[in-house]
Length: 328
Image (cartoon, rainbow, N blue to C red; front, side, top):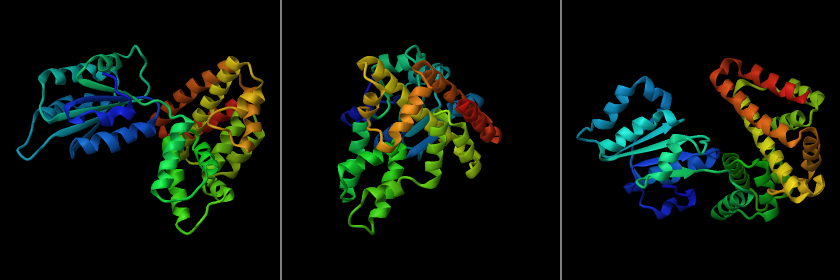
């Protein structure tokens, strides 16, 4: 059965033995697991990767079936779950193993995905999609955080913080933590404070790097690459930032096509609001890339991220070559 993430607390989670959580929102996925599911289940936690299970299938099955005298319930969290593991899950369900919960975590699953369709249709299991957060949701998280921490801050500044998070829940949490630490010795927080706190050099350089890439500004791109000592650890951040900005361009293109607005109106009315100093950059990017090109780049960026993860020793060369080619 399908359960929306915000409705999970309405259910008796102990009565559900199998969960599939899938989607693009890694921050929400983490929140569902760490803040909702695990606190309501058990402390006997075992983590697996799907590939690891297939390499040691006998050990995995023994861990499920064997129960020591001192053990209570078990929770198994399986990362990177795909259709490949469905037969194993169906077999475990048929055995009706007591005191066992399994949480399957996955990225994007198409409608034709076998494991997604199984979890959507079966009444005794839970299918939990985690879609992208909108501006309103992220703003609500920020407002709640400020209220709980007793930090007095205007909605205008919250909007800027949310905008700087680039639509990513985990990014937003990191920015809010910076604000909390800064506010310990400050009675009020100004717009200049927020801009400084949420614009640390490494994040700012990556954002500028991606902006130069999407604007076809190869000179600016090479200048940033030469002035910053990016490492292999930065590659995923660079690619994720690129993907987030591409998603924003796609949405603006779609809004432009639906409402038949001019490009300035589409950018000004976009939600979450685009910070004033970034509007001209976004306009330039919209001019450089049409809708189909932007969609195609999203696919290619995802493909490059997979390659980078498989070849960490070459990740920096792969990533820099990719973004330089995009700027041509």
